[in-house]
Image (tube, rainbow, N blue to C red; front, side, top):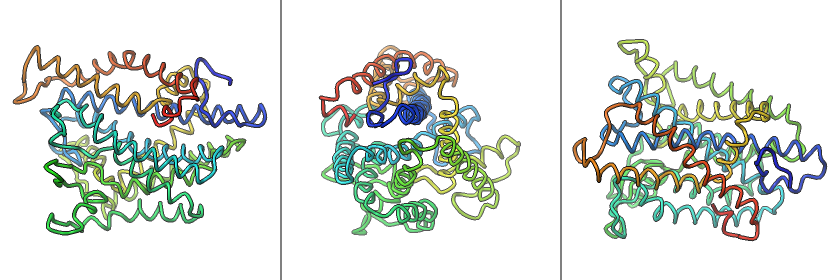
Length: 403
């Protein structure tokens, strides 16, 4: 297999029939992995913020009237992570189907989805700084890995729908799910737990363990389905200029549509307000609901993701692309590695300094978040690069594809 600056293309490239098709596929797949790698760095910023600013947890949506602007925009950067991850998961499932039958794709999505559910409730659950080390844990947060796993399980069945039906269902879920916001169930309802998993951020207890549905899954099913339905745009041998044009058009349309709908203040999220300063007004305009993601949360985040994907393909010869693509080639490894690295650092800080902000350790200045981000990037990059290259080199190790 060919490689570019140390980056080995994903498995789907191997079946390209001609040198021209191989070049098109390589560019396309590098852009996808590079975008995934970029949002992983955004995720790192947010989790470093959570580690050192446990005493200043932001609300959802972020309170634009009181939150420090630096903290607000540091948090805002992370809003691009989950929509990009989930949409690219759907797209990657379609690309996987270019060299596998739909039955094989369904089986893989179902099994990997179950694996992610297990991972969230075990290895990932223990990685958060304040999580107790007892087994079983007293609290399990059902977060992004859980949501991606459930979304993959749902997609395992939905890929058998006709493509127009996939687009229609995905759009209906993303655009209309906010109509369900007024439906609030209480724990005495027999449908409380399913509804908490689907759309109502809440908590429930099973066998003495408290579960918190941080990421209700319904809107994300729409996002992963739309990502899958867009797969043919990235087909082997497809015209890159046409694909770039489509992504730019879609991205700009989503961003402009967001601005218009948000300005009207009639649907899609909590109303924005005119603040006491122009900056507070902008912050209010951008304060969007993530849990579950509102229509107005998804429009600009997915839209900017489309724009970045187009730009990455246009400038795929940039020196930044191969390192980002290598990060994006091993997202689960990076995710677990960075969580446990942050937990180790937090425990060391607690050992040496003790709790400095009530019951937790924390710092006073936001700059320490960014300092630690730039320290951790090279520390995390090299083991992630090693694992990404191992995945490409050792196709005989079947379980590596689940990571």
